[in-house]
Image 1: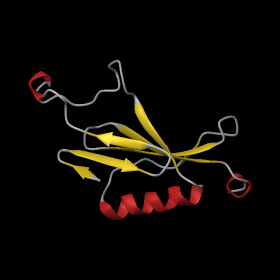
Image 2: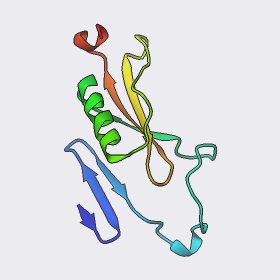
Image 3: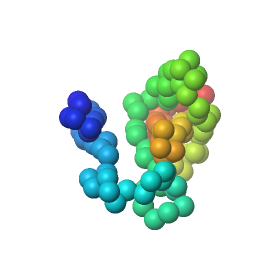
Image 4: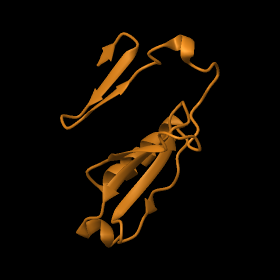
Length: 105
């Protein structure tokens, strides 16, 4: 949903609001995200399956979106992760939990 300069993304479980600075006068001109500063490091979103990560990877490739490989974080974490960066250079991860099927891949 677009609300003027804001965009709301929702899936029924949570809402993510993307918005410009509340006071643009205080914004630092030309500033961009840097995970080495205090604050946000990355954003991770959960998908339903490892197969959805495969679909996302193919979609990114077809649209020219730079992205990493799907990484298996091992049985201790039980996750697969696909990382990419948004236009502000914030790392976004799509993750999927292990299932019996995906553990045998």
